[in-house]
Length: 245
Image (cartoon, rainbow, N blue to C red; front, side, top):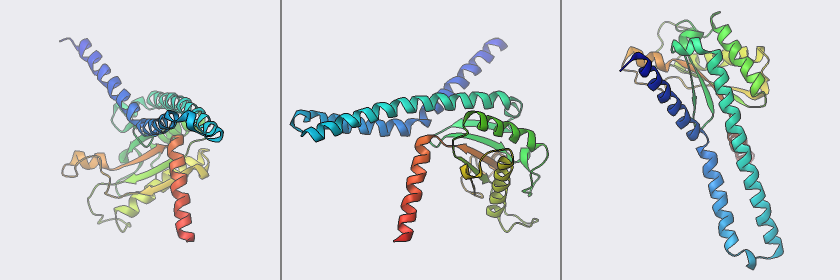
């Protein structure tokens, strides 16, 4: 097999993988849409037995479902364009496997290796991190200025010994927060940003090898689609209600 043919095969495999991630990304929305459709179908069976008021409600629900379908399609296209632009801007870092992008059920995730951003055991951003984060911020402001952004810090499972941090939890939280502050400084509204540290938890690979541990030390920037934003808002609202009670 020629080298050229291998490159083509690899490219096809990459496109198939990206397409699968796209489909998974919008699966949650599709499930909700299907559930709503089934509900309408069930109501439609007895449509002519319903009161005029019920008929009106069913028609309104059908319109809402149709609107939701259009919105999700538009959102899919929008996030696909954001991903393509980020891949173009960060192609050097992606080629070096220091940055990766993925679409999942939560949204569009930008995964930044810790050695791109920080020195070992430190939370202060390195100067070489600035151009990378500048590109990310520029794309976010241009393409998704209205979306909520979550920044999460992650470490390996090696306990901290020679550092000011009490544990990996504190280190991961400080790293996420510093990335958040930098993005705010680049013009992303603070009201749309949040930060959290997961420490050694939520690993991407086994911590049994140096390669796996390196993969786990990272910061993730998550761009949330509209349906995930609403889900978070509803969860926060329920939490507030529980506290009041």
